[in-house]
Length: 323
Image (cartoon, rainbow, N blue to C red; front, side, top):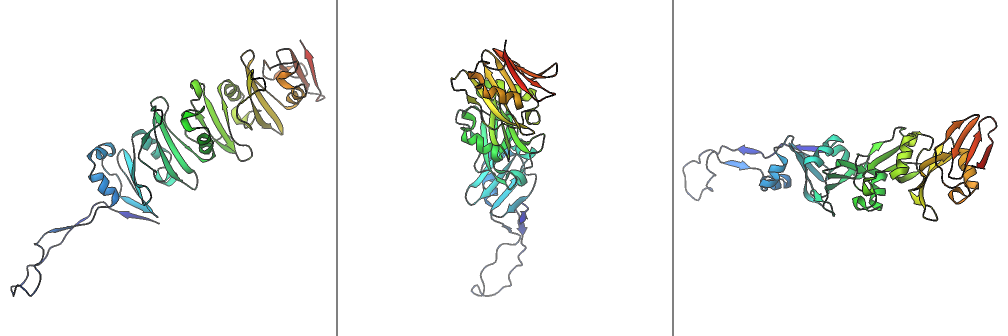
């Protein structure tokens, strides 16, 4: 249950003048008109005894509120939080602005520590206790990416890959619901600023897609296109000559996207992918795909380095041939 404290309360107590009498008859009363000051809360104590912090946060814009073991208060440019485990913690600036934008305390809960510099020194961050909707959450900021929040299975995945020091880099978007409503995702700047994304759904789990494969996936409609959600992270092919991702596909027709320096990144799905798989994929005589599926007379075709595969739309038959 949330309760409210309206800041520092000063109650003026007017004390009547004592009647004349023996000095030992009663203790001397407090001087008339002396104010009785209520003790500082931990949040008030830190705020009023830290001038630099007051400069960061500005003036209070709301009263202190209590939610179980947590007390919190909003200021012009940030927030203060207190729990028995963390003491008083703060957020301010762009991180606080993002915190407000996603719903504040009700969504992200209390900060677990003061804003910190990232290990590499490129940015700033806070971790948060979160809520039932998000679980533990984080907000990361850099001058190039701005401040963005990450939570849920996407955050768990990002953490497992080394946070911003891993191949995903810093978030460039706050965790969002996917266009089809079945999952969640974040975009990241990726290694060498090539771009990366993490997509999660209940049926596929969380997986990353990056670089040129990500661009090809985006061009066909992200998770709403023929490829659907990723079912693997980006992987190296056996001979290390290229990279690929597997996808769930649509209508029980899985898909894949492959990249190499010579062929670029292209995707395929359904019966054409099945036939290419039977031919040992890029290690077979066809090599890597060089075009996405495209219409030809009577069907759909995918071109490869050394030949092509055609799906006959009328019969459902698939054939392959060298150039």
